[in-house]
Amino acid sequence: MKCTLMPGIKSISGAMNIANGRQMVFKTFKRKAADGTTKTETRVYMMDRKKRTKPLSKEEQNARLRFKQATDYFKALDEWQRAEYHHQWRADKYCYNGKKYAMLRGYIIARFYNGDLIVNCEL
Image (cartoon, rainbow, N blue to C red; front, side, top):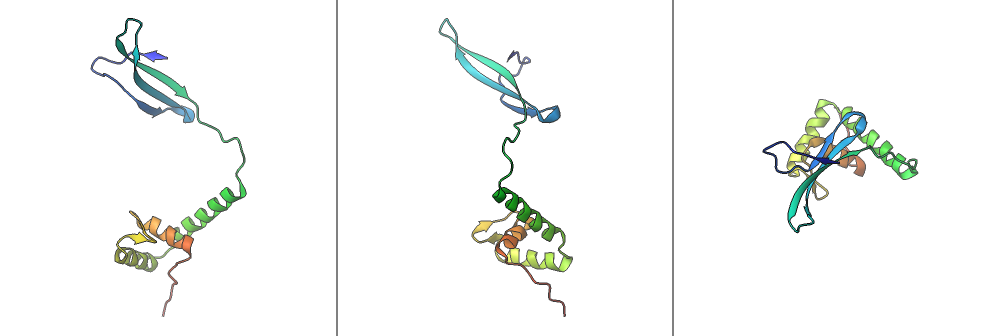
C-alpha cells in the first residue's frame, strides 16, 4: 500500500520487526508518471514469517547436534583451559586454519570441529 512520509523525510527503505515475527517493509522507488515526469513513491508491505515446509534432513540434524556439542564443550571449560586457548589464539594472531576469529568462542568451536582440543593435564 502507498504511504505518505512525514515532512522532512525524503525516502525510507528497510524492514522493521513487529509482533508475532512479522515485518513491516518500506520501499521507496521512482516511477514515471503519465506526463513523463519522475515521481518518488513509498510503499509499505506486511510480510509474514516464512515457515519451513520440509522436515530437517539427517545432515541438518547432525550439524545441529555437532554445534550443540561444541557449544556445551565451550561452556564446560574451566579457567585454566580458557586461558590456554586464549594464549594459543593470541600466539596464532587470532587465526586458525587460515581464518581469523574475532572472538575466542569461535576459535574454540573451530578447534572442536577439527578435533584439535587442549587436554587437561593436571600434575
